[in-house]
Length: 125
Image (cartoon, rainbow, N blue to C red; front, side, top):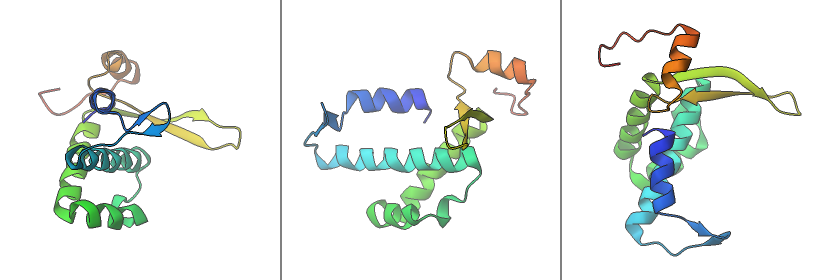
């Protein structure tokens, strides 16, 4: 699930209204939690961190089950693999550098692919 797809779902299923939590049904709460898993997976993939090494992994597995957490990670892995990770795109006032993902469904993807001379081996790209 790309950032565009995640944003669309989150806009359709808000957790907060003007900073106040909205009461959600259990299914919507579960999917919001799955979105958290996806966002953490994206971060780990973007920075080449070990997804299973963080404290969050146990919390995710306790809530959703290890099989579902791994499914979500693998789905994110597949989407990130079709996308472009740009390193050191921004440095904050403490000197920390940040990476960014240009998703395959982003209108700027083709331009970035050409600019960086990236060729994907998958013929579906």
